[in-house]
Length: 315
Ligand code: MLT
Image (cartoon, rainbow, N blue to C red; front, side, top):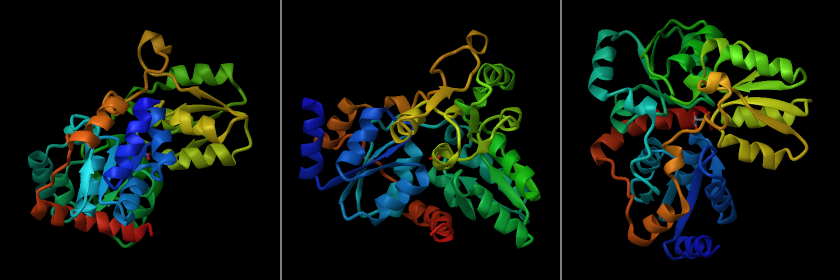
């Protein structure tokens, strides 16, 4: 309690607002909402930070989210609880190699996922998050464009199957979603025959094939509220369960199985980098200014072009 009070005071004193991702610890999600910030996906976090009057943004999530906020609000100070909180998709897509891949396909429109470095964004024509990827690629395909997609291969495959777009893809994956297992999921579905299965499209295609609803964290949240069922099996980071349970007190949410212990691993689907966000680190960042995100201004200007395109598309 004392720590939370200190953070509340520091947020006021520093003219700061906090945005948290659905995957961080419930304490950080609740604190963001209590103090006038939001809990959301990367798209809405970015938009909220850009439009808010605060002069400091505190981003509880992973590094690319802090960078995106900084790119959209270069005049604001952007702090993160832990600057080492990274993302396997970002780490698995180094700009030199990705740029060379793009150079091999000059006829293709480059569409990259938000989970990338500022430098990769700067090389892209379009940025998307999982909540708008299908619509953006669908629109580009309808306009006759061929796509170069990166870095999540599962999401890329899913979009390709849904839209029929001509796509070549970078071969990256999210270390959390990549671990969901179809066989074990089918067994769990037999144990819970009435449960609806909600799957994030960063999961393997055989897991997606078992879903009653496929989509981003916001789409999963909507599906759980909308669908006429009392039980749900959820294949995304377990951080998501907090919001699902708070907004749906009468419904039961069960974690989808991942590898480990023969598919019986409990609470394993949690990003180790998201888990680096804690109250102590947050208080320290606000107190000392540690954890400030810096993006080279010239790079930021280039990276902003595909981000602004996405924000305008989804406005
Ligand atoms: C994000 O964009 O925040 C992540 O892809 C998770 C999601 O919202 O689906």
